[in-house]
Image (cartoon, rainbow, N blue to C red; front, top):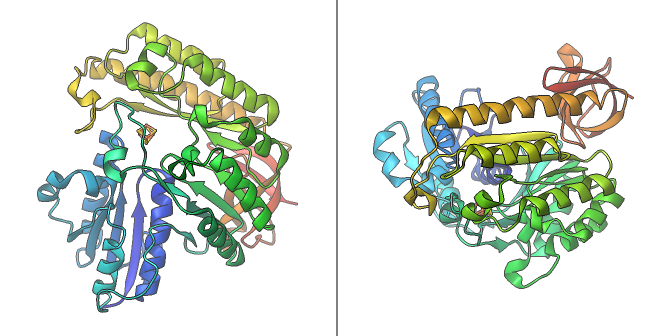
Length: 426
Ligand code: SF4
């Protein structure tokens, strides 16, 4: 059987990179890959388990897809599929469960669904830099797994120890993606700031970025998430001197209280975090900085939370991803009393989200009148517009008589509309 296949992704940029790989394997197996929402014969849910909510979303998507596509084959993969074998009995909607620790399992399943013999001599690497259905923007996974021991985190259990893709291979994939039309390559990893550390390299990420910039000329690069202590002066200097390295960084915070950071086993202090962000803001003017924050970690008092709010309000952050703490089976903190009440967690998350909305609004407002470079992701010639992402990580709608083709388009920003910018191609 060959037919139409669609992939739905939940979670982080590393998962999007995995989905790009799935799309490639599916195309090689002979499937026609279609966008979500279209009729499909095979549906793959690339799930996430970082929070209870991610679990819930992964389950809900599977149930919705089953209702919408009663005859399709439904495959569940990703972190949720890897770490929660007990969920299988409660989700009869799923036809095939595929973990992520054995990278060849999914390509093999795709080939067998496509009616091909198992095995084969294809490169079954789980790393990819492939264009997701014609976008100018693509994800290149440079690293997977994590050796850290954050008390709340289930990811090392799902993805195993840190390992980096060889530099030569990253370069080859980036050059190929650029040749295929990628104009923005997002470098992803579970712990990308430790790129090369498994081979004993120092400054591995900065050296890799330098090499990528030398090996390519038409595309730009975006770093995903980098832990605060991994923002080295070499990385800051690259961000400040290279227009092809997007001025945007996601720097997980989790808490602004040293007591909480220590309990979470996060290897930095609030002061250290402030200093790294201040350095970035001073050296890379206009850089967009975002953070993850957990509210209601075991033992978090109101004072601890106030310290988090204080730090957020006086650092140059411009967006937050705020989560209520939820214990994940198999983690250290799951054995501790989950002692912040659900109501209090909700209040703290609401305060974080209010701060997030205000920071986003302020940052987007500051973009009006500027010319930003948009990586076009979707075109709608009927409506005379296109959509994409600016170098400083804002969604932008481009209004124009001649709808720009995919690529990097200079756009004069005219207005903010809700959560996105609006502008005219120049
Ligand atoms: S650094 Fe900490 S939070 Fe991030 S994946 Fe590793 S263990 Fe999880």
